[in-house]
Every structure is written in structure tokens, then in C-alpha cells.
Amino acid sequence: MEKFDYRAALQKIPHRPGVYQYWNDDNELIYVGKAKDLRNRVASYFNKDVNVNAKTRVLVSKIRNITFTIVDTEVDAWLLENSLIKKHQPRYNVMLKDDKTYPWIIIKNENFPRIYWTRRIVRDGSKYLGPYASVSMMHAILGLIKETYPLRTCNLPLTRENIDKGKFKVCLEYQLGNCKGPCQNYQSEDDYEHNIEEIKDILNGKIGAVVRNMKAEIDKAVSEMNYELAHKLKRKYDLLEKYQSKSTVVNSSITDVDVFSIASEEKYAFVNYLKVMNGTIIQTQTIELKKRLDESDEELLTLAISEFRVRYQSTSKEIIVPFDIDLEDAAIKFTVPKLGEKKKLLDLSQKNVQFFKKEKIDQYEKLNPEIRTERLLTQMMKDLRMNQLPRHIECFDNSNFHGKYPVSAIVVFKDARPSKKDYRHFNVKTVEGPNDFATMEEAVHRRYRRMLDEGTELPQLIIIDGGKGQLSSAVKSLKLLGIDKQVTVIGIAKRLEELYYPGDQYPLYLDKKSETLKIIQQLRDEAHRFGITFHRKKRDKGTLVTELDFIEGIGKTTSAKLLKYFKSVKKIREAKVEELLEVVNAKQAKALIAYFNPQSFQPSEGETLQDSDPDKAF
Image (cartoon, rainbow, N blue to C red; front, top):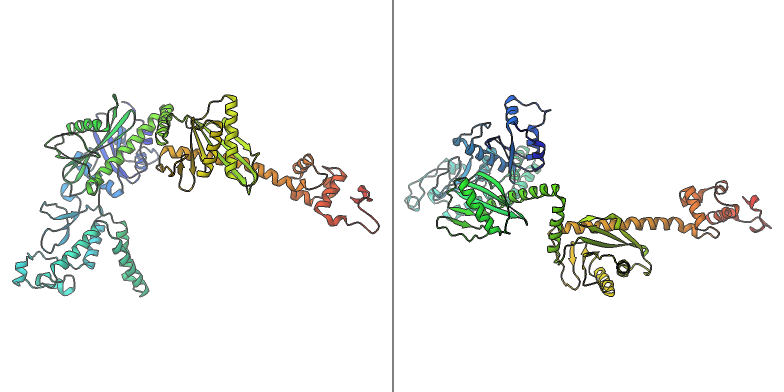
């Protein structure tokens, strides 16, 4: 029997909520489980340090493949697990009975609708909301509704005719204030319906106003020292905060549909399929398609739809897809949802197919790094509107300190990776004061003047760290050299990560998650790091020796010897004569003492410093 490499399988599983499925040698589903963190939960099965029972050890020994479906919340994971277990009845799962399934809240289709909970869905036009994974949460919501909106609980046929004839009398609920007595016309139907609409908002997740009102009631109860009431309200408040009004996995408003989504690359495409029956997802799978003739997404999705529907013997009359498909079939309705519950199902499918695509692409690129490089460069070329792959990229950055110690740095990326041996920095020669534009102009000109003189190949892309001003200065130098048409040059502004092109009035904004922007940011940050490191070394060296340079008789060589021996100007200032004479001669020591401690050289009466014997003076 082939041994299962669970470590490799774990690397593909995300730290996300979802459902995992274990398959055996015969490709038979043997276990379904839910998890708040899929990778951690699956890994726990293979942890030898954890005590597990014999049945679990047998289960683990039979695992040959692991698949998973990611969802948005732990509640959705629980619901999906429930539906998959009941559909497939895996051998190692506890069997679930259909009569003890999800609880729902129903708004009854009748005059003066009642609101209560049920486990049984009847297609009579009533509105069902849920399902609820937590029964206590559902009861808390119903309790909140009852306290906030007095509604009838009786099952009397409250037609307008019966009410007008006075067939009914108010009951004890009216006397207790739990009902406003619509049975005797004490409450109008419009007022009752207004309450029902507000309750629908709460059950659909629009509970912000209710939460705020309850918070005010808690604060009031605390201020009145009614701590028992405050505690009860706080429990309801906490439940509301955790309340999940809608489930993507189970929804009574959607009956039998198939859901498909696609994500494609240059050579591969991936299609996800969700099968929904009776409002519940009962099947989920993602497949990979290898392109042969540069097929379109529409062609590939059409092919996958046919394959999945045959494989799972689907007879659903509605298919949810991400875009219109040119496929005519009188028995099938294709839907491209924009809003609502069907859009949420499509979003869930797309989330899974995108994750599957990323996982597969990462796997291919780990085995073949050159594939990743080509993909990244191709994507950059498209995003930046270039006509050639940016295999050689250079980025410029300037640094100065109040106009002093100005430097420019250049970092180089080749095939989307740093080429550190090609990094360069410049000491600025022609610019006085803090003039970033002129500094950029000088650096760009010197860089490419030398490359042209040496016959070195120019980069395909030049990135300038800065906005329009720095970019214009760089372009000025490129035009002077006659190479402005041979390379693409862009500027990146830090505030909103805008990309500027020469002559364009408006910047280009890339998706914050795009790989192109990430590489540009990496170049910019690397140029800044490289430049600031060089700048600091130059600045630190300058600030350390500047004060010694003011002392007559102390040259650069002597300054370097003093700093090497004493480590700092401060220690030189505090040094005694004997210590100074270890490094310099008597005349230089005298100059240092005279500069740092001039009061030590006030001449005695009738004596001048010039007449003093150096040996005696010290």
C-alpha cells in the first residue's frame, strides 16, 4: 500500500475556516470534518504526540487524498459539514438524521404574520430565515423581537372580514402587553406590517440600530444600579454582536441550482463547481484544465459545465455563472447574479477557485522558478503598458540631510530579482543645497552617460522614487542623452502609491495586491535602504570629523588617528595631556587643549603662550 505524504498535503491547506474531506485508495469519501483553521485541524490527525483512539488511527491509515472547501465563517463550515455528511454518509462519520436538522425562523405568509421557529420548511409562500447553527442565538433573537415588537402568537384567521364582524376577543397576551390586539382592530394592519419590515431588517443582518439602542439601555440600567437587568441585556447584546443573519452554505430561498466559476492563466484554467439541492450545498469540487489552443474562458467553462453535470448526474434547471455563455438550451436557465443570495453563492465558488489556482500556480513555480519569472514579467509588461519584458529594471532614490551629504542610489533587478553586484551609489557633485530635482537629474545623466560610453545594455524599465518633479528631471537627462524613447520610465509617489508617466496628467493606480506593484515597491524600498545606508555612513563620518577639522594643526590623518584611539570627539575633549601625547606630538596636544579647554591656557603675568616651554606647559 502506497504511503500517504501528509506533509506535502498540509502545505496546500490554508489557515482558513472550512470543511475537509478524506478519501481512500478507491477514491471513496470516508470522512468529512469542519474546522476554524483547516491546516491546524488536519495536522492534528497526524500528530503522533496526541493520544487518539483506535478508530481514528484506522481512519488516518486509510487516507490517500485530502480535499477541502473554504468558507467565510465557522458557522458556515458547520452547516456545510452537516449537509455533506447527510448527502454522502461517509463511513467514519456519525450519521445525522434529517428530522433533527437546522432550525429556521419563519415569517408566516398570512394576515398579521406570526414569527416563530421551525425545523420544517413548507413551500407555502412564507419567508424562512436562517439556518441557525446556534439554537441559543436563535432563541435570543426571537426573544429580542418579542420584547421590542409586540406581535400576535395566536393562530386565529385574522382576515379583514372576521375582524370587522367582531369574531375575536383579545387574550391574556394583550393584557400582558405582548400583543397590541389586531384581532379587535386595536392595531392597524399598516402599523403591524411596519413592525414586520423592521424585524426583517434585523433578521437580514441590519441590526446596527438595535445594537445601539440596546447599548443605551445597558448604560441606563448600570447608571440606575439595576445590575440584574444590565446583565440580561448584556447577554443579548453579546449574542447580537456574534449574530450571523445569512448563511452562504444553506439558504431556503434557493432550491436546486448548479454554480460554476473559472480562473485562468496563460496555459491553465481552473473551474469550481457547487451543487445546491433544497437550499443546501451537497457537492463541491475544483478541476484543472490544460489549454491546448488558447481557448477562451467561455469555451473552457462550457466544457466544464457539461463534464460536471454528467459526472454528478445533475438535472438542475438553473446554472449560476460569472458571465454570459453562448449556449442555448430550452431546459436550462443561465443566471449571472449581481446581488443577493445567488451572488453570494457565486462569490463562494470564485473564492475557492481562486485559492485553488493560487495553490497550483505556487506549486508549479516552486518546481520551475523560470515559469514564475516569465509570468511576473509578462504581467508587469501588461500592467505598465510596455512593449517588451522588463528583464532589467533600475530604480533611483536620493538622500540628503538639510542639503548636506547628498547621495543618489541605484538598485538593479534582473528577471524580477535583486542583482546586488550591479547596485551603485553616487556622491552628488554639481548640486548645492537641498535640490532633489537637480540631484535626480545629475544621477540619471551620470548613470546612463557611462553606460552609453561603455556600450552597456540599457534597462527596459527605469523607476524614479518621487512624483512628477523628480520624474521630469530624470526625463530631462534621458532626452539630453537621446535615449528617452528607448526605455520606459515611471515615477512612484509614496503617499498613495501612484505611478506617473512622462506627460500624463493623471497617475496610474494598480491594485494594492497586484504583483506588479509589489515588485515596484520592493525596488523602491531597496533603493531607499541602499541609499540611506550610504548616506548615513557619509553623514556620520562628516559629523564626527568636522569639529576636529576646525582645529589648526590637526589634519585629516591626525583626526583619523585620534578617532581610532579615543573612539569619539567627546573622549578627545575629556582626555588628559598624558593621554593625548600617546597619539599626537606636544604641539598638536597643545592645540587640542587650547581648542577644547581654552581656560587652561590663560598666560601667567609676564608670560605668553608663545614663550612657554611646551614640556613645562603640559
